[in-house]
Length: 172
Image (cartoon, rainbow, N blue to C red; front, side, top):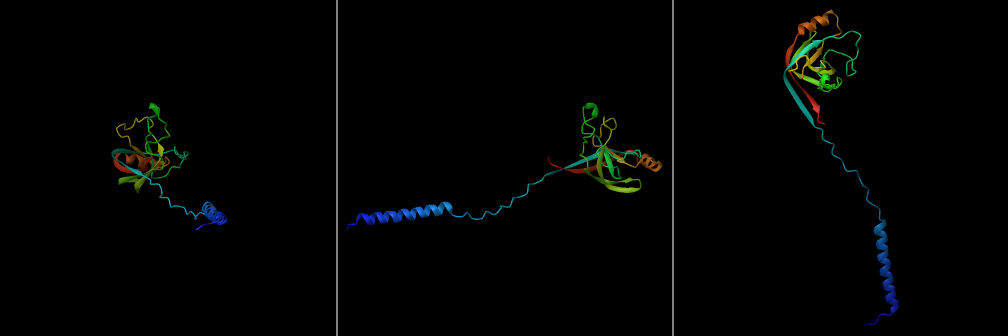
């Protein structure tokens, strides 16, 4: 059986057009709509710090001193802590050993000016050279008021206590 050359050209042309059409379709076909893949939120880690037998003292402040070293106003339930490093060893008095605004959870509540507190908040630094209680690195100084008669009286009555407490910090 003999195929003439025109039919052969026609078959080749049709085959070429089919292949060309398939290629054009393949490269210009619409992409399916891409939906955003849900991202798993980044995990945050926290560290629980716990200390025992640390000294707690009381302090008052002058009525004119309205801001602590953190820039926050003083309030009952606020505490001062040591700086991270003693100032006489090159430390910065504005870098507390426990970060500002950290909540301290007391194992036993403290009585401050007649009110019971089971949590305290770090807003200030004190004892910048660690002269007071060098054996108590997590010493806290509890704010007792603006220096009026009863604040001073209550802070003297508070005295020096050994306390246990803990706090939580975000892992860095």
